[in-house]
Length: 331
Image 1 (tube, rainbow, N blue to C red):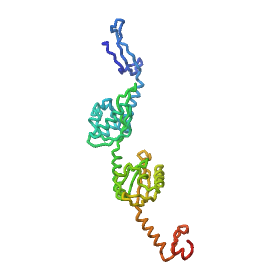
Image 2: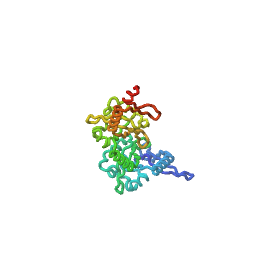
Image 3: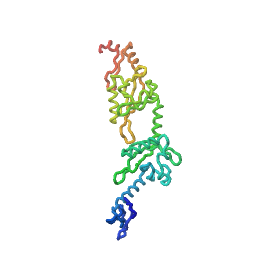
Image 4: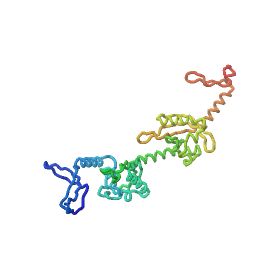
């Protein structure tokens, strides 16, 4: 009646049967032919079903067993489900309308998380972003975040919805796993699905002479395996990437000093939390000394001043020294 129109005003109407319906109203000034205001015209839309779906969605979000939060276009919290309340300790009253990045994120992650939100404001989703959140009690929780743009009915972006996963325990286990690998009394290395080194423990460094910095990101087969063994080692990796493990595979490695050492390798498939193959882990054993002893043992047998022979479990000859050849005549 003052000439100011209103769009998308929600209000309830009670029907003659006593039912409640929700109406979305656009209220427009009504004027006569002289431009005088003579009333209001309201154009409505039955919003009952949509609001019911919205309430159901809110209920599902609130009860889901994962922390879910939302921020508006300015980054202020406007969604905070029950799991988020339990995990971080902040009630809705304590966190609603507060700036999530500025007030609840550690300084070292403010820029990175804001960049994730900015991408979502442009319509781009982000998956598996890891960042810390500090609980009300001061504990640090590591979160794995999927950030999705939030849109209104006209597909305008009005904020961001973040679905999180508490990975604090998992990261602690991974750190412990990394520590055990690094301090193991055996050379352990890992490659990704492309064959690039991403694990190289202390024993491998001591044995081969290359530091972690020198091997990380390098193609293991192409840069550290001699030409005559490249195909065989690559085949072992390819089999592991297909889920087939290999045990007791012998191959040579050239050390940084140019010395050839022999390694007995067990190659195991490496998988992520969802069981997807992400690479290969190799656990080795330096058998250079053992091979030298075996060669010396073979030489002593072959040059002994007595006929020496050997057979396998099926009775087939597998040892026949020089003296046996001279004595019996068979080579």
